[in-house]
Length: 341
Image 1 (tube, rainbow, N blue to C red):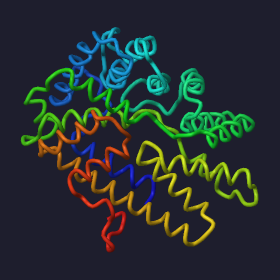
Image 2 (tube, rainbow, N blue to C red):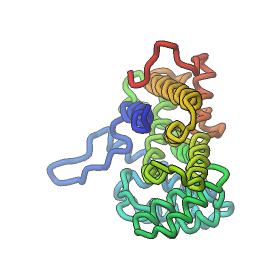
Image 3 (cartoon, rainbow, N blue to C red):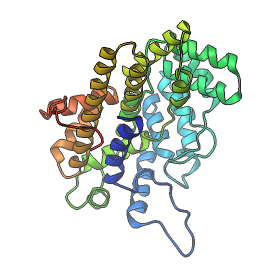
């Protein structure tokens, strides 16, 4: 199972629910206009942002900032930058808010340019020094600058961290709460999820579809650095530690990457076989979760359960497992099941 395969299952489930969510808006011209469903969705999102603008909680404002990225032609008081600035100034603003601020560079939109705001990264290094995700961002940033000394230092800090978190659960909860600030009309629900769709599914799809585009560390540089540690005991130990943190991270894709790195670094056939089994199990769980996300479009009770799990809090991994267990779906694959099918 590859990182790309794991991610594509979830992405396909989200995007197939509503292709219009997360898609870059087409520029309006005299000869063309946005499709009716997209226009209705954007109006709904504007109305939601207008309501949330009255709130003062840091996480809720951060959720509004994430949602605002996908909405074109907003008044200044409802833009991503405005919500983000208010979130940063709000009482209790923490690392999750600064994670949203990482994308405050380059093009602002649902599919932003691949860039990281260095000021937000510097603030995160102080706010969350025990988060390996922060230091892997710094590691990649240093490598891009050609600063080998800074890259080595960042890799060492990542290995010394106690967790790997992209604040996925906190931010998904925040965007979901933002989206729930206004009841969705039946016509819009049907435009997004089909004639038999439901508002719970539409709300989850909007939230998860927007969070999917938040910045996240590129793990390719770590794999490259850990490609052949050889007899370098310090590098091997750091790579093993980072692999462990990734395997117990907050997202499916990071867990998949961590298991793959652990398998690469394993020093025995038995260890490799055990990790390969864990990777196969994760692929099965992700596939089954994606099936349920698709099914939720036309199953109000299932969609409501999915939304409730997000509101209860947790990570992407814990939400995935909780949903499968609540539905009585086996979390281990059948003996004849193969990933990729």
